[in-house]
Image (tube, rainbow, N blue to C red; front, top):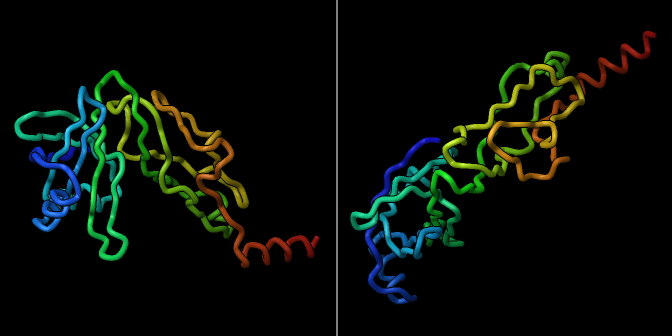
Length: 193
């Protein structure tokens, strides 16, 4: 996984009034869970931009007032109208404690069904996985070269070392859909027989 460095300052006051004052100053209130105690801190919106608006999943090297730890972004909240970031939750990770993360899916290869006139559709852009963060790849690569026309790959058919997939086993990750042209060609071939 990629590493992102982030600096923050501990919040001295908590509550609505202090949080509102932090947000006016272009800071984002954050909380770090999973350690010996919860840490409330703020970070600037400009520092968080590349972490939030990216399809990649990062391990965050977090430095809060000199204390360093590794964390992952667990959840974030946006303002319903202005889309400003309101709050972010981070989860502290260690090398011996499994975590749950959503990793992006990347399809590799030219499917047999696409050569026959079908259209490849990615149904799930991210998959939930559980394991040690040190074993996670940047992306989950799925080879689709043997995928035929009208066929699909389900979560239950995927197996990865050191990772457990948490999505439903019958959920479709990707499939080759029949197009109108492919249906017409199949009907014409059936009519000639």
